[in-house]
Length: 281
Image 1 (tube, rainbow, N blue to C red):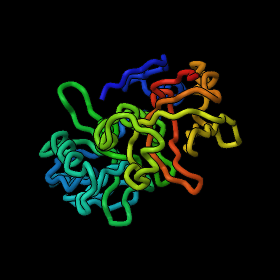
Image 2 (tube, rainbow, N blue to C red):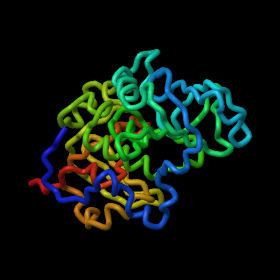
Image 3 (cartoon, rainbow, N blue to C red):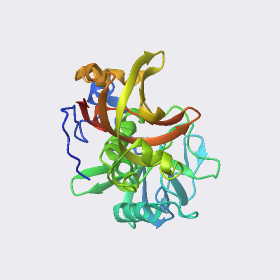
Image 4 (cartoon, helix red, strand yellow):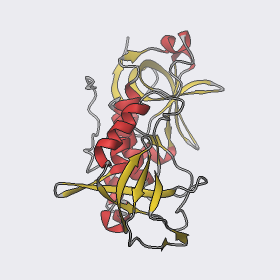
């Protein structure tokens, strides 16, 4: 949804997301030329798993892994809602993946030494051509709010995916828009389980802002905390945003709610998540 913004912050378009690091590490951006397998999608299981047909003359192996003509493929670095439970937005996630790749020829990028998961599924980044451009399917699912992130080790495109995830959460797209509108801390305490691991937009007064070894901790009213990880502080510093976060201001921000032993917490990974900072009297 489109939210009114009363604070000027740095906003990056999808193709410029991560430009701070991309100029120095272009090789970490998704690139279809790395996709060495071509296949036709024959079945969609859910929002992150498909079956493909590699064809009669398919490669017999990739890396140290043998290949069959028909392979079940799990999309790398993402985690769509489960259909079997079912989880919120699971059907929509599967529908989006169906519209993108069903019965179409795709290219698969497989990472050496990370070819299969514990269920024997081929792990891959997937690309599909639309017109003259290639769509990075894994990223499109995250950008649309149809999938969360799933990092299990050293990931090839972690920063790129994180920026797409921030964009989706900040704009409350897809699965992150289950509870629209702006809430207060009292709304959280009225129903503590309702918002856990859900996307929320919350308005709260900051009582304390303190930098620690791991990042910036903002203690707010009724014990809610905002937290900016140390590795992301530079993004907030560049636009002068950190200087505005002082005790007494009111903040409105979007993020995923975590309920920790010390109370509710929302991590802020990018200025895009902050919609408003203002002085209150």
